[in-house]
Amino acid sequence: MSGKPVLHYVSVRGRMEPVKWLLAAAGVEFEERILKTKDDLQKLRTDGCLLFQQVPMVEIDGMKMVQTRAILNYIAGKYNLYGKDLKERALIDMYVGGTDDLMGFLLSFPFLSAEDKVKQCAFVVQKATSRYFPAYEKVLKDHGQDFLVGNRLSWADIHLLEAILMLEEKKSDALSGFPLLQAFKKRISSIPTIKKFLAPGSKRKPISDDKYVETVRRVLRM
Ligand SMILES: N[C@@H](CCC(=O)N[C@@H](CS[C@H](CC=O)c1ccccc1)C(=O)NCC(=O)O)C(=O)O
Image (cartoon, rainbow, N blue to C red; front, side, top):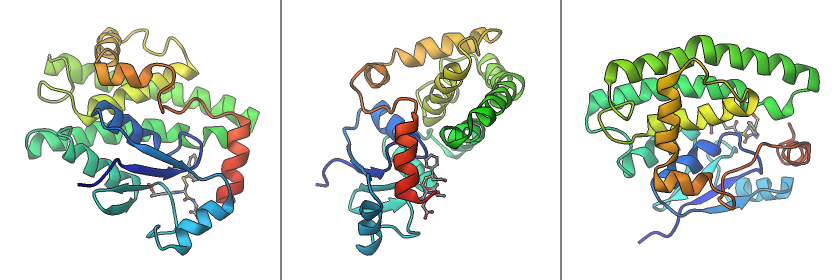
């Protein structure tokens, strides 16, 4: 029987954060191995753990998985967060694709200059409130259920909540004008496993500060 998943990454949210969200929502305990130096990364490379010499890498079920999308697909499927059939999975992939694009605009945010952060913030908020949030508001309205797909929690719900919270860190009233998303946020945040992940002391990464960014740059030679 394999032990807990082991997540290898640097100490910022970056590409690993959605993996933590998914495991936490599924109630799955995991371990973190934070890369602090170039040598930490080089050791994983030398030991042949990184297929493309990159992280994230997740040790799970005897595999050393890389490529974030592959990791997320595997975890969603394994913990029944990927719909009940091909059509539900197609919808989940569509919705996750949208939140992936939206959060992708924030991926390199910690590495931007102060001036570019202001510009990028305005850009992401504009995209969220004019393109992505209206789309999810309509999905919730048309679907008429508590969740985005079917009538149970899926990866799409977890990923949308993560995106909403990240946007609210940039603009606290980002959801004003989206009443169904406001209710959705409350509903999904109160799911016990997610509520626990949102509570202090969880493995959820805080907003990256300059200290973290310097470490990441050092480790990844960015
Ligand atoms: N397709 C793959 C891509 C994986 C990937 O780009 N890994 C990177 C670190 S993550 C990234 C670093 C800057 O882009 C970051 C780190 C912090 C915040 C945001 C992004 C890496 O290992 N860079 C070393 C190298 O490429 O030699 C996947 O989806 O998993």
